[in-house]
Amino acid sequence: MTRAVRRIGAVLLWLVIAACLAITIVPRFLDRVYYRGAASDHFDGARFFNPDGEDTAGVPGGGSRAGFLMRRATGQGDAPWPGRVEVQPSKPAERVEGDRMVATWIGHASVLVQTQGLNILTDPIWSETAGPLGLGPARTTVPGIAFDDLPPIDLVLVSHNHYDHLDLATLKRLWLRDRPTIVTSLGNDSVIGQAGVRSRALDWGEALAIRPGIGVAVTRNHHWSSRWFADRNRALWSSFVVTLPGGNLFFAGDTGFGDGRWPRQAREAGPIRFAILPIGAFRFTPGQLGTGSHIGPPDAVRVFDRLGQPFALPIHWGTFKLSSEARETPPRMLDLLMRCSGLDPRQFAARAVGQPVEVPKATTANRRLDEQRLASCARSDAVAALP
Image 1 (tube, one colour):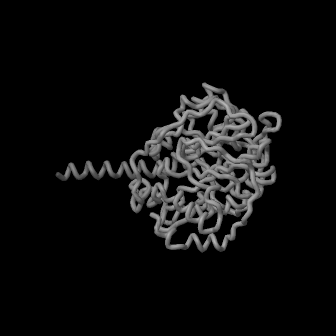
Image 2 (cartoon, helix red, strand yellow; image 1 turned 90 degrees about the horizontal axis):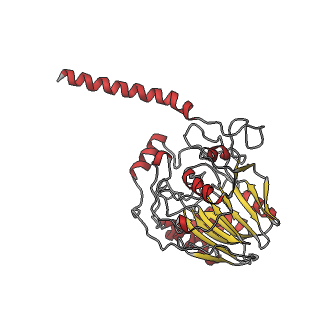
Image 3 (cartoon, rainbow, N blue to C red; image 1 turned 30 degrees about the vertical axis):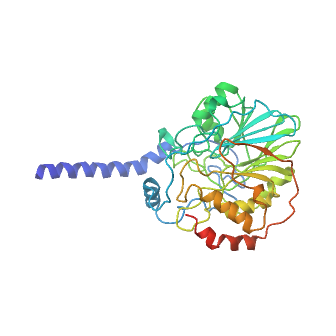
C-alpha cells in the first residue's frame, strides 16, 4: 500500500514538474514570428496592437484564464445548444453578372458574394472543428453550400488567423482547385503559406486592384490574433472594403467595437451597398452584451448605422459554440433592437444558412440611429429575457 502511494506521489510530482516546464518552455517553442517590418501606430516592431486602446487581452467576463478555459471546456453556465443543425444546402449559379449581387451565408463568417462576374468568399471554413490538431469547437450547423458545389472562386478574404476564420485545410482545397487571389493582413500570409498556398498580405489602408474598377482595401477593425497562445498578435487582423461599380462590399471580419471610428473610415472609399457583420460569441457572463473582441447585437446595430445603414447580413453565430448565449439569441436580440430603435429590421436581418439573398442597390438611410434609445432598448426586459 505504501509503495503504491509512493508511486502515485512520484507520478504526480513528475506531472507537476512537466507542467512547470511546459509553462516556461512550450510557449517559446510555439511562438512564431509571422511578420518583420518597421514600427507603426499599430505595430511595435514585434507585435501588433489596437491603436484605439487594448481591451482584448483580458479574460472575457473577468476571472482567471484557467477558470475561463474550464468553463468553456465544460459548458458551465451555458444556455443549451443543439448537437447538430441540418440545413438545405443550395447550389449557386456559376456567375452573377453586372450590378446584380447575390449573397449566400455558408455559416459562421463564411459568405459567398457574387457580383460583376466575380465570386468572392470570406473567411472560408468547411472543417468540422475550429482549432489546432482537429480539436476545438465542433461544427453545429452544416455548410450552406457543399464544397464541391462552390462555383469557381476568384477572391478570398481572410480577416485574421484564429482557427474559426483561417482554416488551412479549406484554403488548400480552394487553392488546388481554383487558384484564387487570397487577400489578408500582415503576417497571415506566413500562416497560409504553411499549407503551400500563396496570398497577398496588406497593411491597414493598403489596397490591391483585382480588375478594372474593382479592388480590395484592407481596413481597420478591433481584434487580436493567435494560433498557439504564445504567438499572440504576431499577425494583423482586419476588415475589408471591396470597391465595386454598383456599390461597395464591407466585410467586418471578427471585431470588437473599440473606438467605433473604423466603420466610418470604411465609408471613405464610397457608399457601402452590402455589409457582412458579426453579432455572436458575445456572452461569457450572465447579461453580457459584448466583449473587447466581439461585438454583440447592440454594437452591431451601431456599426450598421455608422456604415450608412446598408443592406447587411449578420454572421458569426450559430455554427460553432464559442460562448454561453443560446444559439438563437444573437439574431433574436438583433431583431428586437432594430425594431425598438425604430430602424428597418429587414435591412439587417438573419438569413437562413444556404439561402441565396438578392442584395438591393445601395440606398441612403432615411432615419438615423438614436444611440441613447438603442442603449435603453438593450436594457429592456425583452432583451434581458433572452438566454
